[in-house]
Structure formats: structure tokens, C-alpha cells
Image (cartoon, rainbow, N blue to C red; front, side):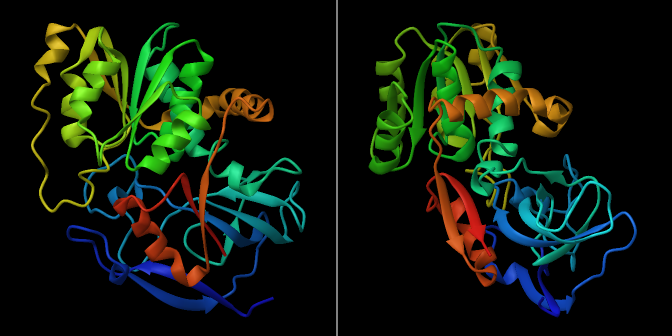
Length: 331
């Protein structure tokens, strides 16, 4: 066993685009578990767009990461030593492990069922899958026959949103960046259509593909694409606000949507949500998602980078659109 625990600490709050220099690599002794604890060796880390917000010193749904603290992050690890009933050496567990090679955990870590692929546990069966499930079905109040449009559609959450919509008898249209991502959405994930925002007129394509309007818009990006969607919502539309990655790294808060009055005219509803509020019902979502994956009804895509030294630059891939699918790092 290694005698040191490498950790990535947040050393400065980002201004504008997050930078590798906002993090510092340090080493500390590998901790020893006490009673009721397990020592876990991190094997996989998941990178999330929301991490940019966690780095800001402002009110949020989670406390900000402190300067000098280990950067927060979900991961899957292997139990190496256990002083906690129900956990044994060799068990795989998932939870908020942080950007570190070794971590002490307790009963809050979730044991993965034997044979579960860690990549799947951190994507479709993890927080991103739960976000898609509850965001679309509960917040979006999906109904059979709805026209569903999702931005960031080739990402880990957006791709599942569209596929659940199809499973529930709806029409799914994705907005993504690049021909490869759009082809994957229609050829592999079963979307009815995909719009390449880098090379197509998003508004014109939405008008063409949604002549009777958009019933559910699942927003992951905000900005001008949100405006184009708002301009084309149907009567009684539901706009699900999941994220706004287009604005995460801007130094000043961008202006709000110009077409918000369409919500009034069309008697629509625009609602934000945080998946943490639905965690008590996680088993319900995981059961459905696991069934659909096993039956081949949900395709999933992961983007895997390697090496603990590369964690910060892997996070940056999310904000440049370099990732294709759930962004993971294998230690």
C-alpha cells in the first residue's frame, strides 16, 4: 500500500474560466480507519459541470469548497481496510470521495451490487441518471405524446432525458455540438432528431422540427439556446432548468432570457431543481434505469481519461465541449 495520499486541493477561487492553477497537488499520510470507518482507495472519479459552482464563495445548494480543502467530487473506490460492520475488504463503494487517492468513509458510502460496472454506477445509474429521471418525470411532468427538446443532449444527463422520453411515448429532439455527437443521438440513443448548434441555426431547426411547439424543454445550457426554445414553447409547456453551463465560467452574470414572456402567453411553467431533493427516492429511479439498461433500451456513453495527475485538466474538458458522454477519470 502506498504510504502517501495524493490530494488535489482548491488553492484559489476561479475568475472566469476555471484553470488548472486553481488547484494544487499535495501529499499527506494515508489515514488509518477508526471504529465505524473504512479506508477506501479511489479507483474512479466523476467530473460534473456543477463543480464550477461549488468553487464559488456564494450561497448555493451545497456549501462552497473552502480554500485549501480537497476538491469535492463523486467517485468509486475499493475498501482496503474495514472497521465497519457490513463492509469488507474488496467491496466497491460509491460516494463523495473527493479528489484524493485514499479516503476514510462510513456508512454513508453506498456499496455497489456485485458485478456493477463502476462507469455505469457513476453515470446512468448515478447522479446524472437520477437527474434525468426525476427532472423529466417529476419536474417536467412528462405526458405521453409530448414533444421534448433537451440541450446538452450528448451529455450524461441529456442523453438519458431523451431516451426516457422515447420510452414514455414522446418525441425527443436533442441539441448538441458537433456532427459526431448528433449522429450518436439519432443512431445509438434513438432520438428523433438532433440539432448541431455549432453548425446549424438552432431557432430555424426548432421551428422546422416542432411546428406545434415544445411541450417540455430540459435545459442544461441556458444562454441563447434557452431563448430560442422559449420562443417556441407550446401551450402549457414545462421548462426544466437543470443547468446553465454556457454561463458557468463567465466573469459577470449574463442577462436573463429575452423571451421569458412566452411563459406568460403560453401559460407555461419554468422550474429549477436539484437532484439531492429526490435522493430518498433514488432506489425507485435506479430500479427503472437498471432495467432499461439491461434490456438495451438506454444507450450510455462515457469519456474516460486516465491518471490522478490529470484530474484538473479533465474537469476543463466539460467547459470546452471536449467530452463525449459522462466525463470520468480512472486512477
